[in-house]
Length: 199
Image (tube, rainbow, N blue to C red):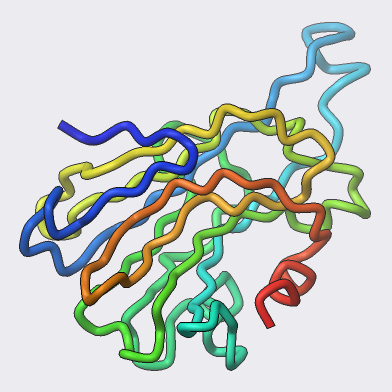
């Protein structure tokens, strides 16, 4: 049975999933449906939302030291191959994970201590879109071998005015990998702006 995480909660992966080596981080969301007009065709809708999941690989000081430490739709794999993004989903349509990131915990370089999983809205400022228009955001961790869900975090806060979400992180503590549910909103208008917070 998967653990349902609350904001700020941490779990020890060595206890919850002994022997775990490869995980799939699934991230998902839905765009809030607007009502109005004839069958919702008028007075609602607006532009399509393009949400992008990314991973920031941080050193012990919590900093990004190279562009290759950012895994996103434009850089799908970390330099040594320990983190791999499965590709961009432009619409977020349908049930289940919208984007997935595969992490080989045993292959993460010793100088990387924290993997931060974020989602941002592409061209959020220009399109006047924010996370107040998005609902049902979640992040879940699965064992890549069995596809069994280990933990899930459903974000429930109001993120109006926020252009990015820091969803969760996997971090190394005393040689053991842990997962934390973060759920923080950010006014960073682009992935580049978000990255600046970690440089």
